Image (cartoon, rainbow, N blue to C red; front, side, top):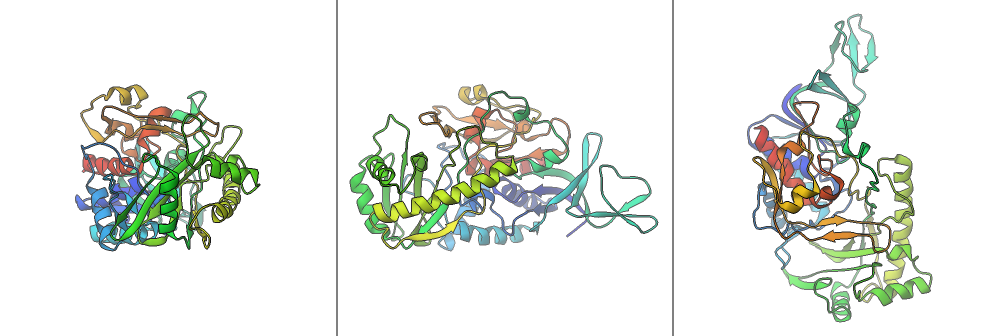
Length: 444
């Protein structure tokens, strides 16, 4: 590890990994800092698989995403679903592949590490201090670093200088440290979105379950099943929202009537198969139910949600064992390490991207992504979720990744400078990959 880099990326999730890899491949000395013991962010720690399809033919800044999925495919950890979505991946093998490609690109990676402070001078970031860093005074006494550097102090090796600093933490933790302005601080009536806590179940007879669910549900926009590389891969869903004839509705109703699950447990349910896990399914649920706005930045509320999620997972697992064909010998095999957070902090950037920009397909000189993914806003209230399909492609400008206060500070991922509604379309994995790659190309 060096004491000076061209670019430091904090947060080794989707956008952060794409930014770090691309920066290094373009010749920039790159440090990637991750608080977990593995890379991948929500893909690995929150078990967010598969990646959703951007639904566009223009693949702007798509190189890292395609490379990652190609390398996963070579070890059996990726399939392309027959609808054309390349984003079906194995989250455990994802950790290994991300290690390999960062090493191949020459990215220095620090695991189990957090940034202690950010060193600034006027409108420029000078560097960072790693967690628990100290400053040695001239008289050899040590002082924990505060907000300013005094002339009689010299930095130890924990200070790392950088030309560019990129926040890929999801919650914009670097921006929080410097008391940067956030959009969510002044937008009114923002209820965030409910989080979920994903899990996996193993010991499932996938073929038996597939036959059962495909016969139960004729709606191929909800339930699909295919044989890919000799294995059965499938998806199905149910929500408590009205207006759609959900095939699983009577099954869930019986589970509620019998006391296996609560009504709130049925508010959102979705499952997917996982490559290289032939007897395992991954669940995009439970969606954490709250009767009042939930703030994912509040550690007390976040802690309560984790406990509530695990309780719901236990109920749902027992419900499926009793009600779903092929689940007779199933068991919980994994619970996500972290909540699936859809939106939290959003920075105020040099350009605030709006829902009007998205809906109109506004064009920009320096776009970092192109997509047609719907505006996807989840709600804990029955019938209040939004899925607004887009008929035209939209793009996000690089200026929405730039700090409005510091000229070498940037954000990538779900914390970018976008209003609440547009962020609900921009937050998906392929778009976050594109943000990271696009920013790296812009800076190089």
